Image (spheres, rainbow, N blue to C red):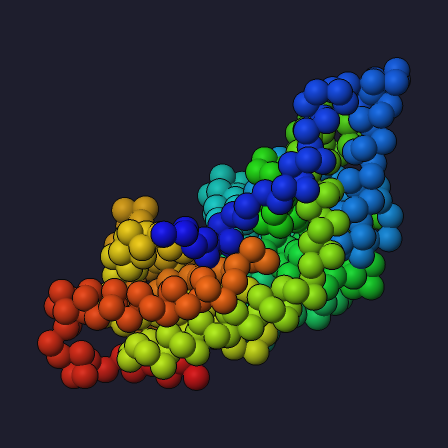
Length: 398
């Protein structure tokens, strides 16, 4: 039974071309890019090329606007903490209720330990930002707005260009976590008012442990990691050269396959959704059906636990992820679905299917073959199993 991987928002398979690009950095091109001899110079040139490849992917104006980091979490932390340092007279942050923990956990920490005021903007039942609440939160006291480009669980896309313009009106910096959006959506950061943007290699068929932070030219920045003068004094420490080169190659390939993401991959996602909703009653899609990443489907199957679905799918060789935190031992649904007010009976049974360019129609057919039986089996074991039609969810997902 061929394994089927539908958890690409968690991580992606490293593309073989990426692996081949990385291998020389472990053997022949092993020099330190800060060294002035030929061993260092050749590696320095490879790092510079990777910077250009990322520049092209996001539409940055200059390659030196790209700073390499250890991943999306470091990039998010560096952006937020830098803003508070360069504008110490501003002591407020604006973010959303559905951000990645890399942002929300840091904001909670800053609120508790430094007295920073955090405005957490709510979302509606489709995961769309409350723009009125956002506008009301923007004051001259805000140092930085950090709003993700697209949500990792539902795929809902935020209007970051509009949000950035509004932030500029009060003199705040604007940062976006674009970890899930990059490679799936066309980007041209030089044409929008985004000051900083976070990226991660392993979401675009690159290696883990490598990320990047775009910092627009002219934006004041204070480094998070102190030490040497690497990365133009923005991120100390000897560069992860193999990871950087791999990320660069992955960025080049992501740009090449952008159309595939928005045509073939999107059609696979839509075919899976349509097939599951036709075959399984009491199921609905979470998120904005119009403004959504082309690869992401978050579907709630009412009256059952997502963990049970994942375990039975895994036995069939199918990997995806739960929209709840059940698999981590918590009985609470994910913070994203709670923020969207998805009913308790549905939030626990939410499953995220996330596609990549590696997936095929055969993968969709296999899921459609096994999923109805899995849901039926679990509902028969559910306390609601015999009286599902009597349970009102008081929620219209349309």
